[in-house]
Length: 204
Ligand SMILES: CC(C)(COP(=O)(O)OP(=O)(O)OC[C@H]1O[C@@H](n2cnc3c(N)ncnc32)[C@H](O)[C@@H]1OP(=O)(O)O)[C@@H](O)C(=O)NCCC(=O)NCCS
Image (cartoon, rainbow, N blue to C red; front, top):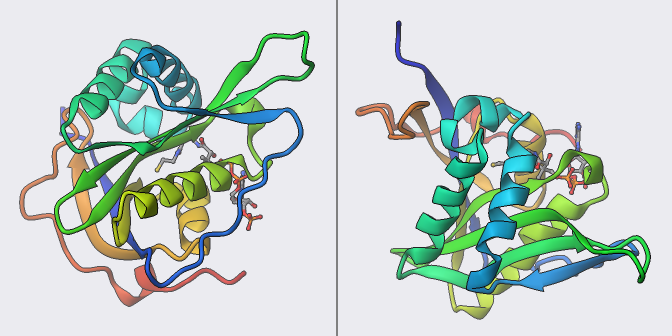
């Protein structure tokens, strides 16, 4: 059987050139800052956000809960892990009801002053309430507070909602690459600069 590969965009935002929009959460939602004992909660939300979506089909590690546990553990163990850019979003319908986690984002510092966003996810029942936008903005503030001048991320080119969201925040495509779905590795020789049509901002 042939190897499955997926087109991905590397996107970058200059944090010195933008004013990050103020984040206001709808009623009932609250932020949970990162602590190491929250890794399991991050893994659960990541799994529930990705399992039925495009990237869950694309990447094996996002399709099952153990894959998400490994991913969170690998991310948070890195010496350049950025706790300030790592957040859970939780929802509590009523003060007497338990909170339920509904969103996750993690950040890592990369060489060159880049804060790299790792797999933002909102579980399906909570989408379309600007929570994905809020999570990214919260993470960007964390990168700024950590003194990082740029933010970067990678997104599957077919994920039009996510690409549109990143573009609307000012991210631009700087590179196009192909990844092997099984191992997640970049396929050798696949990196290239974006075509003008890939750089173009969508009409808003
Ligand atoms: C991408 C994702 C995080 C967006 O979360 P969300 O909370 O629904 O997004 P928001 O409500 O903040 O919406 C962001 C923008 O996308 C648009 N949007 C949201 N859902 C949409 C849909 N189904 N179709 C078209 N546009 C949509 C919104 O209109 C909004 O734009 P606006 O602020 O200009 O109105 C969420 O869909 C998700 O978790 N997807 C699965 C995991 C994933 O693919 N993550 C990205 C990996 S790189």
